[in-house]
Image (cartoon, rainbow, N blue to C red; front, side, top):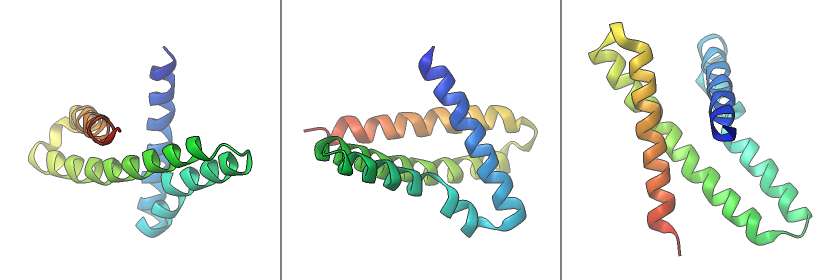
Amino acid sequence: MDIVLKSLASAVVTAIILVIAKFAGPKLAGAIGGIPIVFAVSYILITMENRALAHDFLVGGIYGAIAAVLFSLVLIFFNSKLPDYHWVNFVIAYALCFLFAFGIVHFTAK
């Protein structure tokens, strides 16, 4: 159940960032997006003397940023092909990008 709540929270944050992108521009939305959060949490972990966890968290955040770019591209593609099914497109794009991020983590694990 915890993963469902985190996913819903992530969806809300994504929606807020998309609204910011619509009204304030994509540069601001990208700046507010996930990468600064990842760097902030990594910095906190480093200052807590937990460097290994900070490194893994930072790498995971970069993988997440790559998946987020892929998510945007896949969603744009799906919405251009099937504009009447925007919610279905969102779910499919989200699932594909989750699998992509999971695959990157799985195949790059030591």
